[in-house]
Length: 112
Image (spheres, rainbow, N blue to C red):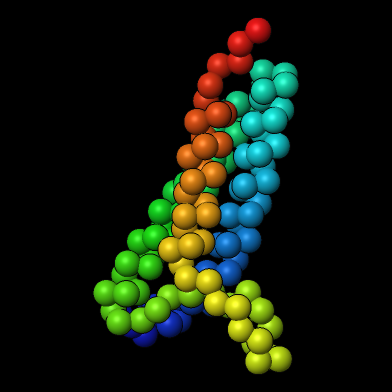
């Protein structure tokens, strides 16, 4: 199981990029929804996908700690021996909280 986790670590960075794209789509959708009353479904969908991705990272953190590892992503250039490691729980919370907020705001009806 630990070998599988090690093999999956390089595949986590594209998921972080996906989270950034979902965050941008969700924020734009919420702004558009609050201004025009349209695109609420897009914002809600992007928000809940982002929240689900955040939960995925939190579950991966728990599984990694259970296996005795410290799951993290390096946001620096390891070829230059630069390391800026962020644990999965921070990434998960950074996706979960705005995802829930965007999902909630995207589902609200526009008044007035």
